[in-house]
Amino acid sequence: MLKLDLLYMSEALKQAKIAFEKDEVPVGAVIVHNGKIIARAHNQIKLLKDPTAHAEMIAITQAASYLGNERLLNATMYATIEPCPMCTGALVLARIKRLCIGASDPKTGACGSVFNIADNKRLNHRLQVKKGVLEEECASLLKEFFSRLRSDIGKAAGSRRQSVSEAQAGKKKR
Image 1 (cartoon, rainbow, N blue to C red):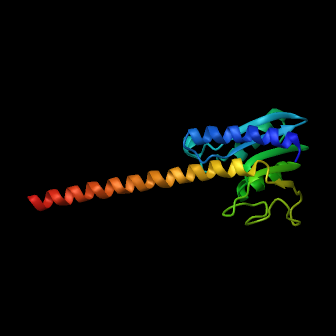
Image 2 (cartoon, helix red, strand yellow):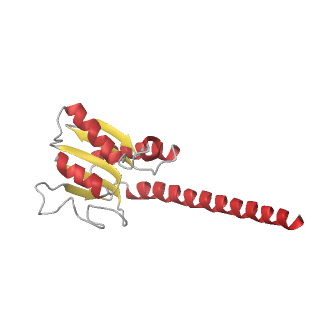
Image 3 (tube, rainbow, N blue to C red):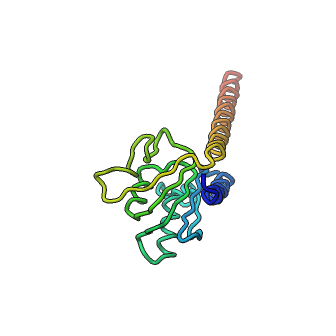
């Protein structure tokens, strides 16, 4: 594995940790062009109340603005999780050359896990995809987030059940 891939994925992982701290699904992305990071982003779906505010989409917008061009030729994206169909479609449209992925996404991944938009011969552009860059670190952050989320949901449900039980007990006393 290239040392630069590890370095840039660690930068994407830093972005995912920012999302984690903000209670967003912890996905991070960076885009590199000519050896320089030109975009850094993390999921901001809750913050912006925008279902399209994925880290990859925000990074693509930043990179296009930086380059002054909608085509991100010879650029590489580092994403902590396999991009969804929307994001992968945007990467194809932006003509990103290369995509490095941390963890695969068996539910919505569009780079081979569920769909393969990244390497679809019917499209006019295909991405070079490298999977498994800092895979364990990327996957463990997602697992921790969803484990915490399920725990919080369980606690909230238990609290609601207790409130309902208390209310019902109060009615019986009357």
